[in-house]
Length: 374
Ligand SMILES: [Zn+2]
Image (cartoon, rainbow, N blue to C red; front, top):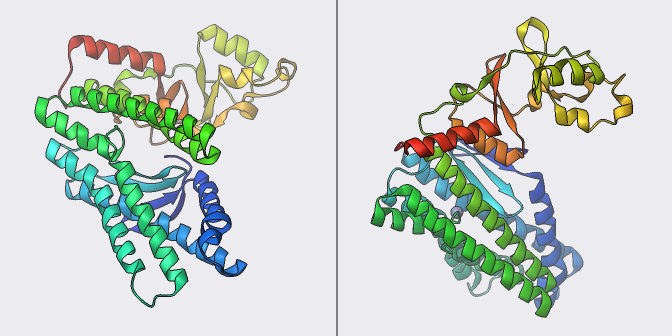
C-alpha cells in the first residue's frame, strides 16, 4: 500500500500507517467515548475519553500483532515481508509471494486469526479478574471481544480474507490446481461480499444506519478485492518468468522540459502517436513524465504559455519498475494506481514504458500458448 507513514519496526519488519487510518481511529475513539462507555459506566468526561483512546490504541496494536503473526510465519517459510500497513479497514502485510504448498498456505493464512483469537481469549479472561478497577475491566473486555470478532470475521471463507485463503489451500490440496483453487475461493469471496452488501442495506433500513453502511462498504471492498486478487494470481501464473523489461516499449522520443504544451501536443504527441513521453533531464537522465492526460487537464487557453515542466509528473512520483521486475507486477501497479503505463527505470536511466494494452496482450498470448507453472 502506498502513502504510508512509517511508525516503527518490529522484528525487522517496517510498520506503516496509511493516512486513512487516522480517520478510523477517531471514529473508534469517538464512538467509544460518546456511546459505548457512557451507556455502561458513569465516569467523568476526562476518564471516559482517556479510556476510549487507550482501548482504541490497544485494539489497533492487536491488529498489528495479527499481521505480525502472518509476517513471521511467512518469513519462516522463506518469503520476504516488505511491511505491515494499518489502513481504514484494518491491517495488511505486504508479503512478497504466495506460499509454496497448500499446507504452508493454510498455516500462513491461519496464523493471523489464531493470534487474534489467543489475544481475545486472554484479554477476556483477564477482564474478569476479581477486584480489578472498572476502567481496566472495560478496556480488556472491549479489546478481548473485538479480537474474537476480528478472528471470526477474518475466518469467513471468502478470498482474499484469511478464511478464503484457507479455503483456497483446501481446494488446492484437493485438485492440485492453484489457479482453479483461487478461482473457487474468489467466487466464495464475491458471494460473501454481496451477502454483506445486502445485509448492510437491510441493517441500514431497519436498525442502524452507520452499522449498515459499514457492512455494505466492507462487502463492496471484499468484492473488489476478490476480483483484483484473482486477476493478479492469474497474471502471476501466466506471466511467470516474463520480466517487465522484456515487454517494454523503448523510449525513443524525449521531450525537453521548456517546450510549451501547444508544441508538445503537435510536435511530440501527435507526430509520434504517443500517449506518454519522458522529459529530458541533465546528463541523459530524465526529469519526469508527461502524458496527454496532463495536457487535457490544463485549460486550452494556457497551452501557448504553460510548459511541459509545469504539468509533468516529476521523477520521484513516477510509477516505475526495474527491467528485471516481474511483468505481472506492472499490471498490479497499474491497477492499484489506476494508471495506464509504468516506466522502466534502471538506476538513473529510463529505458522504456510498459502500457496496459501491451501487458494485457502478453497476458492473453501466454494464456493461449499455455500456462507456465510457477
Ligand atoms: Zn489476517
